[in-house]
Image (cartoon, helix red, strand yellow):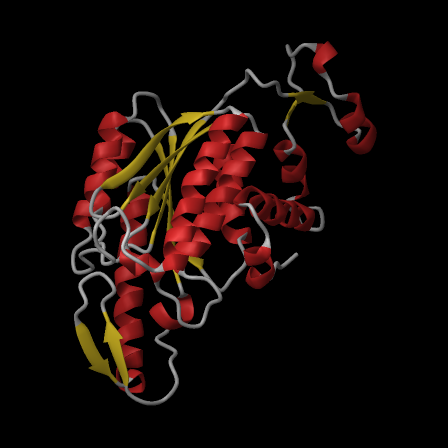
Length: 311
């Protein structure tokens, strides 16, 4: 089920949008090879020898002819933190209906909805050149509402496109510093879900990789979503002609004829991205490129696969 961003934008509040996205995704799983995920997602876990027989959900058995145990409110099997880049470059869009930040916020809201339904605890960190918000991981509905409120504030801030309490409309990204700080602050083993366009010191991502490895050293699991508008930022697939490109974080400008540099640009981007993926894989960091012109399915499935591996 592919949801039109324009339709989702009209829905309010964010919780309703997140539920719509997730339910559309789960509905699609019923018709896919991943059908089993929809049952596991629905607050159940497979029955294992030694589980209390009285906790079997017989309604689920009647539908699936398989034994599942219903999870209860007190069962929090996972702590997860959504770490969201809110720097100025995340406001970019050209072909897509949503900016990278809008897309990431809706993805974050959808993951929070899934985590809450699975009785997992979720926290939120917002950062640009420094950490702006850092909310702990909790599983209560009141806490979920607080997380949605913070995300909705970011959506409203982008819509208004005016100076906010941070003091400037141009905010650079310092993801490495934010992740190092987070690694030191988290006291319990957690799943850290990072969402960023990674537009930071693109000539050398070693500081970012060092911060991701710091999280792994502290025994945290890491799922990194690289949020990009693929057609423009990976393919440089602009119409013929001359374009003036502006760095949204520094304001610097560069005049370019995309057709003249496209192939070399794509070659360098592919080479760089491949190296980064290999480095993440070597450190057991899950890395996914997410296109803002595509449905949320890839990201949600990546999360479910990660969640399943964690047990």
